[in-house]
Length: 149
Image (cartoon, rainbow, N blue to C red):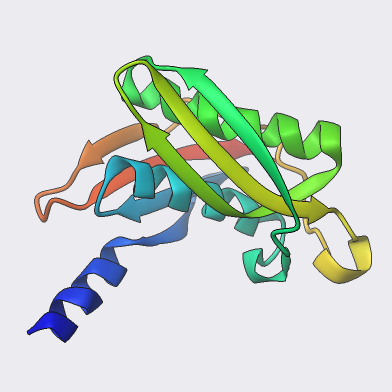
């Protein structure tokens, strides 16, 4: 029975893209809200490149003040967009902790290498379009929005 529970847990911990007119929707799933935020960040990277191509060489810490879940998701993703743009980096691994007052996170990545990463687009911002952070009927957390490319 433990193997089946592990498979179910892994199914909850994933990401995907969804279609939206000119932009791209990103969606993260997790057993916790933190995992859903982490997976939404992986989906963000996957808009640009294959996350597996990004080596976790450098850690960048991000701290945000807590606000409603939806705004926090947009702030989290836009913080990553900012860090990618100013540091000229891509991130492939994320860790998020949320307490009553702060989102404390770490993103690991490396300098963008056009040959290695073959970036397809530049993400300009996370938006409020199709924005939701919720717990589904199966108790899986879902964090999603549309990103402007």
